[in-house]
Image (cartoon, rainbow, N blue to C red; front, side, top):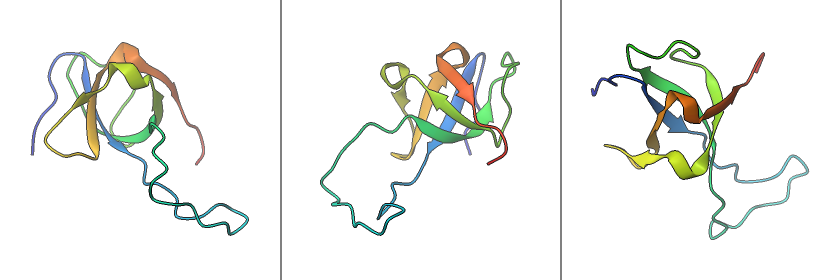
Length: 85
């Protein structure tokens, strides 16, 4: 396991839905940037979010990490936290 430092946040990207709510199957070739995920770890300087929060973040601020489904962003790249999901 890797530990976040300073103001960094590790976010596991949301899984892509295989079909819409109406039952339409989505092709796997459709590549849209994913900007929603669940926080896996936060650095000691992070104050506005915590582990387990579902967040929306700015796509151009992400960095790759140890896992292709996990990205690293700074705390100020987080745009919002989802409530009651």
